[in-house]
Each structure stands twice: as structure tokens, then as C-alpha cells.
Image (cartoon, rainbow, N blue to C red):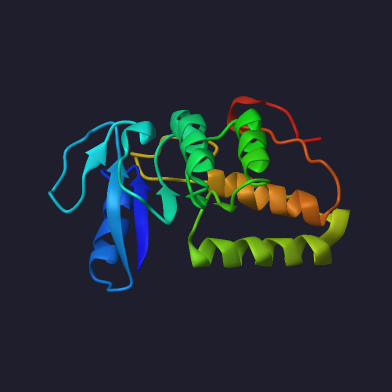
Length: 183
């Protein structure tokens, strides 16, 4: 049986993962991490990773970028594989998780949706076919609870296109405030 720690367990995605795991017989949530330590009694919820007493096989994170360093320190100390799904990491934080991945298994994605990952692959194919003959612009719209802008999803798409075109792109944000043509 796979024992899971959910970081961000009281958030939308954390609650969804806990609900899905509850219906399974091959895994269970043994602990949660959340700034709001309320628990429905199914598993203990801790404010910090280093407070966890339960043994686990994997840590799944849908929390906040501010928690990355403590999560990685905890995962490294326990040799715990980590699935990191939080958006808004800085370049330094991405480097920190890459460094940790040299010692423990780390799966990092800014969006876990199958549809979005298919869209990314299709965007790469479009960039390969269209080449440098076309301008590419990503326009995004979100619900009113969205915290990070640009979204991790938009950045994943942009990075994939940039990689496919084999050149560094210059990302321009909030272009509506500029009264000039794109270069």
C-alpha cells in the first residue's frame, strides 16, 4: 500500500486528491501539511513538514511556493520521492528542485491536466510546422481565485514552444498597456 503525504491538503487540489485516494484500496493518505491545520479526522494535518511523525512513500505538493525549501529538506532527509505541482516557483526555486532531483525522485509539473499536456505537445508541433514565419502570442483568462500571473500553464506552453524553436524567447507581459507594435 502506497502511503501518501499531501502538502496543501486543505486546498482545492489537496482535498480532491484526498477524496480520490479515499476511494482506493492500494494507497492511503497518512498525513497532510497545510497552514490551516484543521483535519476531518481521516489523517493528521501539520503546519510544517518537520512535524510529521508518520512514515510515507511519496509526498504530493499542491501548496505554495514558499513551502518548497522545507518540503525538499524533508523529502531529502527521508529519501522521499516528491510530486511537485505548485506553480509560481522562481528560477532559483526551480534550480533547487533540480538539485534535489539528483538525490531523490522528483516529478515537477506546473499543470497535471492531461488536456493541457496534450495542448503543449500540439503547440510544439505547430511551432515546428510554422517555424519563424509566425508570431506566437498566448492570451490567458482565469477564474477570480487565480493567484499567479502569468500562470504556470502559460509558462509551460511558452517554454515548450521556445524549446521547439530552439531559441530563447522574450516573454512580454501585460501588453495591453503598451501602445506600440510588437517587434
